[in-house]
Every structure is written in C-alpha cells, then in structure tokens.
Image (cartoon, rainbow, N blue to C red; front, side, top):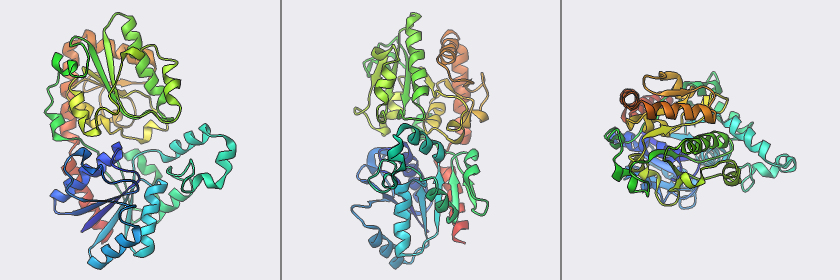
Length: 391
C-alpha cells in the first residue's frame, strides 16, 4: 500500500505538521508514504527526519508522478489534505493521468473561512470569476461549489473532530482521528524554571504565556482578547509576558496593535524559531491559553496546539467548544464560555492565586493527553481505513 498525501501548501504550516507525523507513523507500520506539496517540499525536515518521499509540483509534474505510480502497480490511495483549491487541483491533475481512489481530509469549517474572506474583500473582486482561479485572491481557499463536488466524488472522508462529519455526504465513508504531538512534549517538566524564561529574554519571575499560531480573519478578535487580558494583568501589577510565534494575515497587525495596550509585553519569536522548536519554547510558559468561544468556526476545528498544550502538563484555558466538549472545567482544564478579555483574565488570576489547583489541572490535562493523543494510534486507524477504501 502506498499513500500519497496531497499537501495544499508547503511544510511551513500546522497542517503540514499533521501530515509529517502521520506519514512517519504509517511508515513505521510498514506503509509506504509520499507527500506531494503544492509549494516547495524542501522544508520537510523542519519537523524532524522524514521517513517518506517529499515531492513538489514544481520538481515533479503531476503527469510524471502519476505515470511513475501507475508503472509500479502499487495499491495507491491519494489523500487530499483538505479540499482547498491547491490540494484539489493536485489531486485532479493526478487523476487525469491515472485512476486512483482518493480520500479528502477536513480540519476546519471551510465555508466559514471562505465567508470571512468574502466579507473582507470588495464586492467587485468577489464577483470576478478570475478571483477563484489560479493567481486570484480567492484561489487557495475551498470554493463553495467545487469543494463539495470534490468530496462527493471521494472514496473516503477523514476529519479531526466528530463535528466535521456534518460536511460529509452520506454515501462517502468517514473516519475520525485525533491529531497528537511529539513524545518529547509529554516529557516536559510541568513547571518552567527561571532559566527556561531567561533563554527568551524574559525575567525568571515573570508570569509567562505562549501563543503559537497564525492570526487570521477568523480568530483575530479572539487573539486580541488574549493579548488585552495580558495587558490588564500587567495593569494589576503582575509582571507578565506573552510569547508569540506565527504570522499575521493581511492587515490584521495594526488592527490588533491599535487596540491592545501590551505591545511591550509581546515577545515575538516569528522568524527566530521554526514549528519544530515550539515544544522547547513551551517550557517557558506557566499557563497555556487557546482563546475563543463556541461559534461556527471553532465548533468545527481542533487547534493543533491543543495536544501540545495538554501534554505539556501546564494548566490549559480553552473554549467550551470542539475539544473542550470532552474536557471538564476545573478538573483537567478551565473552559471559556464567552471568550471575552475579562473572562480570560479571571481564569488567569484564578490559576495564579491557586498554584496547587493549577498544578493539579495541568497533571490531569496531561493524563487526558496520554489517553487520547498518539500518532501511532491515529496512524493505525488510518491504515485500516485505507484498506477499506482499497477494498
């Protein structure tokens, strides 16, 4: 069996991290894997040593790859990593040269993402058909019509949380698996040392937070609420810093900074570290926060940072949505109902004022992670699903 993951971008995104670790885990279980990226595949080693073949559209044209796969006569399954235009086009280009069964993966409410982009653009650009074609501003998202047709033609459908099955056509078999994280994260000491903080230019006695993730149209207000909570914390006399790693999409930076009062509290490591360094930076954090609330965007996602957050042994604050529906407030996490700045601040203050309770929540969160998050288990389930697809 040969699984070809069709990566909608390159190896510089959280999605690519999922592909990397799943492909490696499948390889350990005897499944041959390749990752075919729409963009440059040269960053495959940013997450570690790949046990799969990394290809890109520019180095290996689709027709050549399809001919190579067909000539070997292997049982191949194409796994399109999301139905976004770039991954869909890679898949369809291979299918033009040879007939393979394909599976489509979902990790977000693609319609909510597309709708947010539409609201952000001038009406004349949205109305222009060229905007959804290669080179257009909407190309790269999931086209509202084409993505549904693409999924309807698939032999299988995978997703990272049960709610995403809402987008699965009834006739297409589905499979849910949880993302996981590196084993090294489970081995992190549950509390930072002063040296862990000083490494990043933060005083050793400073309350430290860490947000690894891009800021985009769907989560800008949520991240702003987090930053402002840190600002209010500092106004109350608490020495606090928040480490940031990730990119701002479009004109969001000034929209965020113009309303926050803690610019000097932000330690930005973007460009200084890679995705593979995130667990090491996490050592400096006292509390880890995924901001937000239950809404049509968050309900259908599983932020890839959450397995790392919980596995780290630190107390985690997250929305009462997606994975939060499986956790228990005050036991293995603290849940946000509204996600507003004041609510985030109240939860932070509770943890800072109750260190023993904070430690207990962190320990219970790690126990949940140990039970539910394993690339090996996720890969084994996928392997069985691929067999069903081939049959």
